[in-house]
Length: 152
Image (cartoon, rainbow, N blue to C red; front, side, top):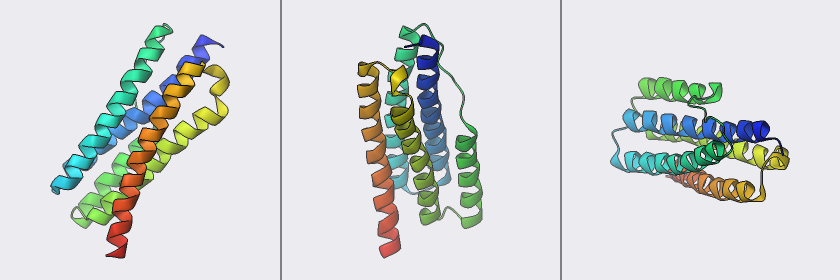
């Protein structure tokens, strides 16, 4: 197992968590609805916890954790800003944007576990699998809220 490749894989996940943190901070600013603000704060905490664990792993390997975000994360935030501005903070469209961002986060985690597991220790794979379950739970919460709006 090559340390540099492991650090790169960890940084991929740190980046998606940076995207989530920034995206949900933006989403929270774009809504006046307290239940959404609380939800977005919860999702931000999920990513802060994941990021902290990933950064610790990268540091243990002598690596430097990335501070940036991805283009897809920037697209998510821009899309959130545009939709919120155009729709007057429409709850359904905000949740649409969040669901899109959550799908990207889940995809990133699943791709790492599927394609990069040979670069991760068994303990790192377990940690990432547990993080994936937390992110999937957040995704399911957004999906459920979104579906409730569609049904109503």
